[in-house]
Length: 593
Image (cartoon, rainbow, N blue to C red):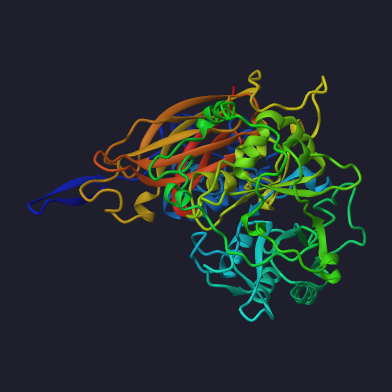
């Protein structure tokens, strides 16, 4: 038992014990049950893995490899045979990365359905390094996104100053551009590092036909056989992700007119106001507020407009010019359709031609109030892309659940920042091996027994209840400086845990605060009734209590309920951007009751 000291003012120092992590009492009791004379054999561990961890298909060979790895890592704790475990090595195994709460990282969803049957990991303004107005454009954030498994990359193409080449640029004036060719080469090099499933390039085109021809030549020569093209101008339904492996797909509106290079203009009132309705510093607004969000929707007076709500601002004030370059048009495999008429007309489903439409986040919110069933039906065959509203100049994001609950495949996010919405996005796409494509649940793909369409606002019967026990946490003293959380004492950690899903399921709960301890032990249990577990994500955050200021961030993770394993598991935590800490973990038990 070592000690650490903290200075108070400059006249005296406080000393605190810095202990080592010890197995919680329940772990000790389980070890007694599944061991003999203080030693756990291979057969003992097989029995534990089957009865407690729910690993029905575990083999003796697998268990032996677990024991050998645990004993190799903790040789100083174990003096017995390498195919046995002591309490210490058993505990160290339980709180190791080997004992993940998620299914093994492999693709296991059916990947042969049309692309419209999948949620797709989608970026917005993928080339920006920071805020939406003045940050630089670069291929670096594109590379980072692809390495994280993002499968939809957006590029804004504008003429350069001499009108003889193409730049990637946001808004035409405010950001420092990057060359299109550089971005294309980076996409080709990094497209399939994290996943072999298709990458979609959504292009915002502000080019003359002459420059469209330049783009067509660049794209064709850069991607070569990786580029997916089709002789047909439309599909009755989209191909499957399986059939499009290692392919790059171009998606944009078929360009019948040249759009003049008008700068993006965001209302000054929006910039000043910003958008903190979902994400604020400190605690922010929790996902459970979706209940009031849906109630709030009903307060709007929303009618089908005779003219469409605004498209991307980059499409406004367009000057009609000559027809588009034919080679450029031929590259477009997923054709985006411009919205016409009222809200109900946007979601007209043409059985002869699957298409894609784009909506700003608040347009979707308006659409689902009175036309939620139409949105869900539309997204069974067609692609829907949602993008952030223009006032999010700080690259913040919106609540993705509204889109997912209505079948939206491409919930486009700013990947440049961080925050709770992005943690939910990262959580969903941890499923299915992190390949960037997650099969939508059947409730969104088929009508119910009475031909009804799924309604996220309707309160259903509880299907299952998740029980979570948070035992303890460790690793902060290894990953953080001694005075990171508090200058005068060790940290005071607590855990927030809850569900993000349909409004009836969304909730957050909180443990007690453990004062002055780098290795906190809570031993607290929580229950979460789930009416639609297919759309649920488990949220976990750790914070350090601060009486005088906002609480400090201590780690987070978001886990897809569809892949959550039962039993006692080590939950690795991530930083605010989503990168996993080297050492910080929680030990928790998951079971369904």
